[in-house]
Length: 113
DNA sequence: CATCTGACGACCG
DNA sequence: GCGGTCGCCAGAT
Image 1 (spheres, rainbow, N blue to C red):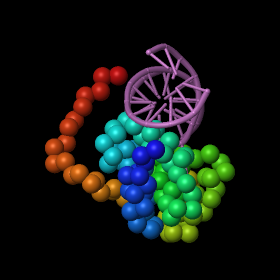
Image 2 (image 1 turned 90 degrees about the vertical axis):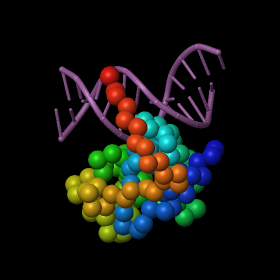
Image 3 (image 1 turned 135 degrees about the horizontal axis):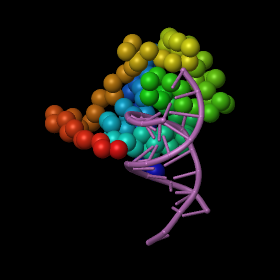
Image 4 (image 1 turned 45 degrees about the horizontal axis):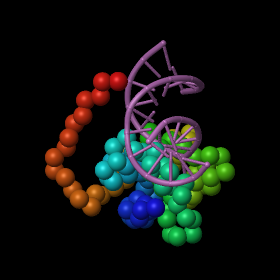
């Protein structure tokens, strides 16, 4: 898979900070494709120096199966991230992924669900 | 080529 | 606040 850009972005996450699948997806030009990012995470080879535990779900909530959830929370706490009752304060620990191709224009789409 | 599934996200009741 | 549904993208069958 060509998830290199995803992994690379994740590696850039500063210690003590976290980001969400949605943010990553947006940064990778995959709006709504947060699932794809999640899929990439699932396929993320551990032991490659990829801080996968710094990637969380929207709202600062951990969207991970139990096995990894515990470890992830522990790792985050170790890095100084406060998991306030399981939810992380994105306003303080949320990290904005820098895009590789900054696009000044911000397209706004109307959703008529 | 048709369908299902999944470490997601937003909306609705 | 919780659970269910729909929409999104990519990979597997």
